[in-house]
Length: 257
Image (spheres, rainbow, N blue to C red):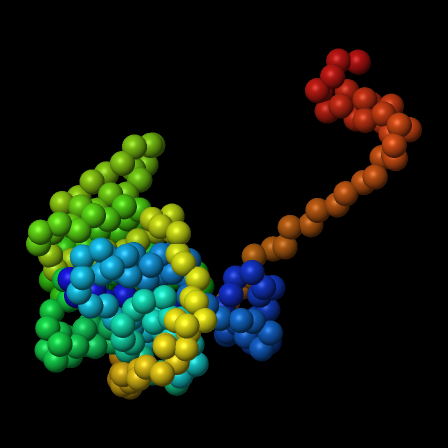
């Protein structure tokens, strides 16, 4: 089984997001970086499949030189090799991103043989475009299933399952080679160990510089959603608060007066 996982370097969403003064980008001076939760699960799924069935695995990202950190994190938990499509740091729209990834996949397959499975996260944590996996599959002429939360490899095929709207599950019998985008919850990703990080630090990362392809979506400006304002009121302390609590419950209709 030969598996490729595509990931994206994104700002850690636990921090407070601040925009640049002109609204053209996120101010990342005080943010850490990671990969999207869906993509963490994609990396973990690739490692588990190779551990169970044998084979090889690779991880690929399109991004700045600093994205090497996310590639090494993936190798630290078991991915064998990494490919960095190095950019100058500007945003790549889904059309350009998919085009660069497809070109890299074709080059990799020509050199190392075809990938049986290409895994992606269902969507990235920053832009949430839901497009790259589908565009990659369409360009390569391979079947694609999105939103997958259960994946069972078989002989020359995969059984992919995802949650259906309204409850229940949808199952897809997909021939190999295939493109699958997974969702958080398909597994519980492991954390890189110290020995794993040391091994990953020594590995070479294949690098190339893809050509920018204009003509896709154009970013005009970023806007932050309105902040939710909440307030708390202390209505009393200890036993003295009991009458105030009863009065409050009566006012909101929980207790009858």
